[in-house]
Length: 96
Image 1 (cartoon, rainbow, N blue to C red):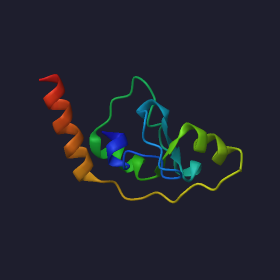
Image 2: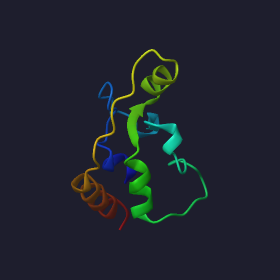
Image 3: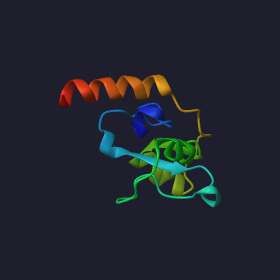
Image 4: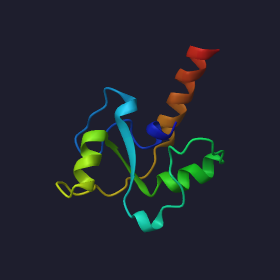
């Protein structure tokens, strides 16, 4: 749901082939309350969305290039609840 909320693709280059290759990059690390992909944490969807709104969705290559200073991080875009609903429907169809 988090990937759908952030647009389903890299905000730098548009990559969208493998969800496992997409990362959440905090635009301003000083505002980071928790890591989105941290294992073992349970939080409400509202709390997760608050954190996602501080992030950009980028592919692994672009993420590394941002940290290396080769490219600039894009500015976070607002989340998309319609894509979340669409992802929920697909999930229900596949697993129910």
